[in-house]
Amino acid sequence: MTGPRSTVVGDTGRLRLVLAVVAVVTFTIRFVPLAASGMLSAEYGYDDGVHLSLAEHLIAGQLPYRDVLFVHPPGIALALAPAAALARVIGDPGALAAGRLLVTIVGVLNAALVVWILRRRGLVAAATGGLAYAFWGPAIAAERSIYLEPFIGLGLLVALAALARRRDGSTAATSARPGGGMLAVAGIALGVAVTFKVWVVLDLAVVGLLVLARHGVRGAVRWVGWVLVGAAPILLPFAWAAPRAMWDDVVLAQVGRPRTAGLLHERIAALDPSTHRGAAVAAVTVVLVLVAIVAAAVRVARRAGHLPARENPAGWARSLRWPRPSRWPDPAWWAIAAVVHLGALVAAPSYYLHYTAFLAPPICLLAGAAVGAVAVRVHRSQRVAVRVVGAGGLVLALTGVALTFPALPSGPREDRALLAGLTRTGCTWSENPSYLLVADAQTRAIAAGCPGQPDLFGTVMTERGGYPVPGTDGPSETVVQMVERQLAASRTVLLPAGAPEAWLDPALIAYVHGAFSRVATTGNIAVWQRPSG
Image (cartoon, rainbow, N blue to C red):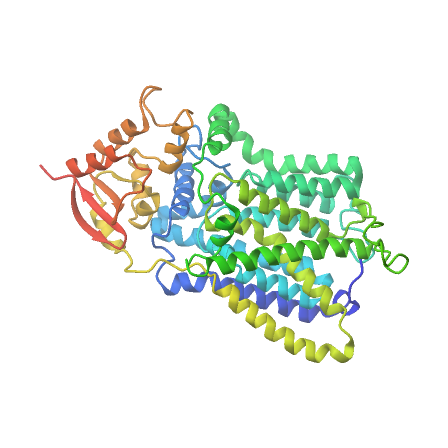
């Protein structure tokens, strides 16, 4: 693989500076707004509460699938186990802050890996890709809370870094000892990643084809073995404890997810959380994705010398011959990954803003490679002017991307001391586990044996799919009956101040209104308590 000599040999200090700038920008954009607004340990969404609560149940000896329902692989519970253990010392809100800090650090690693992978394509390419990741709105949304996408992005980027081509066209894995080296790193990284979300099977397919093309059948077999080394120690203990329940929760229940925003333009428009810029952002995003993919594909052919325009100016398109996959440069595989990821976003039963962070690694790599390719071809006499124009364009581009930053929740924050005081005695139940965490009630509820589920939405979804639900009293008990039983054993209930989620059965709302009284409202949380006496 060729590249500008100054970026491959030397320029170590500049590369370190780019890495430092990208890391600081990525961390600042994600962490500082949370800390400054008081949201670091506040209620913010649903999934982060599910994931940390699941880890707290795990610390208490309650396994996912066997004891509590969870519709994803168990990797996130293990990743958050240290934060869950801290909850016993610093409380649930402190553990929530620690979990969010962990995910922010994963986001910084992702941005730094984008820079590292692109470094041989020039500092301009590395800086562009890294800053694009830092400013990517959905990545910000996923990496300032506790979502799964940052972890699966980390697995893909580690694998791509390990398998990246060198200047001479080889890869770090080529010269590794059989079954070891960078091939092992790539396999283990994706093996661990698949224990966070099943979408990683798509990356396993793409990277598996890359390994097969460059390292042959024997290399691919060794790589698959390393994938199993990464995945098996995490998955097998839970599968051994409850194989049928794990299959039902992680695989079959996902098929029954309710579909949201099903059309392509609706899902791409959702990149912008505001309503008035959605169409513009959708159009720009589609254009950028297509241009990046086409540019990468054309560059594949040009680098292999298979665009015979000089020999046949009128019919070069007809005589276009693509090189063998073993000769494809890295951007070709990034483009394939981008297409596969985009297809997953379109085909997925449901869609939320943070899902699009799945697309960030390949798209940011392609963007950096495209800008780097242009920078390399600029004549020396034109570089000063181009750098000025390019810097201005980069500022404008990043400003435009910044307009898609997902907004933090507005309005007053909850009074965590008030919530902790109101939930200190008796069991507390909530449809949203994040409410229990900010009230510092989750760890105490688990220790006291209070009934509840970390993911009530997943429980409802699983029941609608016709699969067994942990916590029900026999196959004849419905989720509504199970929750009524949990409410009957609770002294306090925490619900949204506005209205409960649509998926919560109206009969349960009626039960709360009949058996409890609303005693306080703080932030977005309404506190209901059973009348004394």
